[in-house]
Image (cartoon, rainbow, N blue to C red):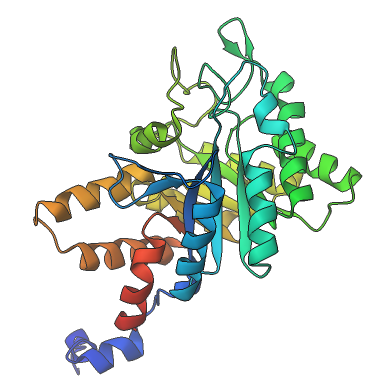
Length: 324
């Protein structure tokens, strides 16, 4: 019997590329951006080396640079100057994110704009929904999320991305946008968002750490996978066009399972903590940053993610092109 020498398909770079099962592409990546109020402002985020919060005028320059590198899409988070207990600064059509969307679409009409829809950065207590005592009131939060999403859609967002993890928010947002004649605006649902410790640097960036308690009553238990499938299927049923798993690297099994279980594209979010750990290790020269990033992003795609949100998107674009 002739032996199967699998090494024959690994002997040269050309052969390896010929038989490669997963090919990372620049089109797979989406860069998140932090948008702050004011003019000519930029603030470094110490826990996320290389990432800044930018005022809208500075943001436009960064998007232009990103597009020159091959970037085509961005996810946008607002950092308001004022927070309250009602979510007013989240739903105002003149708020930071609707204003940013209008400016982006005026200057770069072909750039794909995805807006994060959540109240945590806009509420004083840092939770993702309005309170009833110390309880996050799911149903009272839904109208605010719908108004926020509608404001973003009216401003020109191509997709809104609810990240709050309130039950039924997808159907409420879909109905609200449809009633306003915004049926072409898509929904990317953070369907499987685990209550993770990997979000720390993001919370520093937008000052959204909860004043009390934690988010475990509405974000998912990271020990569960069957629940993830139910969450994703429910959001598809309610009208989500794309579902997301967050974080990514510690949840490759969840990405794979969701990809097998739904009939819409699956995205994954390579989150702030995952980004910052690679950055910190590379700055210590303990790892080869470029190689680790390409390997990590490839593993996310291999697991089943068609779309990868990552703070490395801009930086990784030339690495991916060179690696092809």
